[in-house]
Length: 109
Length: 113
Image (cartoon, rainbow over all chains, first blue to last red; front, side, top):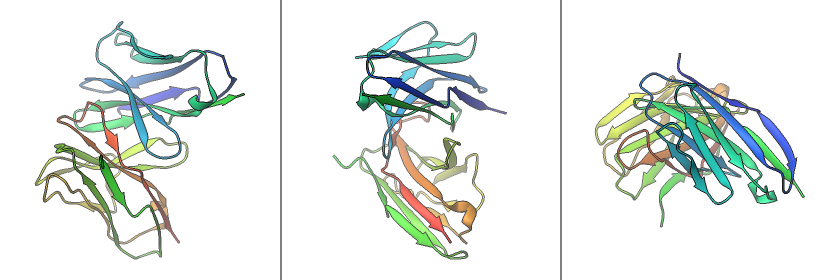
């Protein structure tokens, strides 16, 4: 059965810390892995990864995919209170998108 | 810039009632989908559509119907609401294929009593 597993489920850090969020996946017909940030309401898109070893970066956030080991990581450096959110990863199997349960990140001042 | 618009934002139903959650997008996206989000379970796909006139089931379709008569609209119908359908529902759309970036509506919080 296709599945996406995220770890840890929750994480509490202080401003300035660096965090690493993990996502492992098992989907047939793998095409891409996506990361989203969800604050109060709708998830918003962060990254889409399709190739191993190529790091995607956006400011303090970066992500990389390992297609051999079937996982991805999302790094956030110099965390800020505004980074507090649930981070979701997802992997589609044809037209069926599978999401992980999410990692709830809390950044304390 | 409307994007994906969902209505209503909140709804309380009695067991056995029916209702329709509305979803509209103005980005001319082919792919649209409905998810439910429950605590600790992430987002689960209910139904999706790859274009007008075409719909298919996702991971948790039971108790829900959809239709796609136009590119813009993708309503979700609850036929006979049950307490197990208490959840937050999100509609999403993507430009061409299901495996790219999705744009989400603001969600509908549904409570069935």
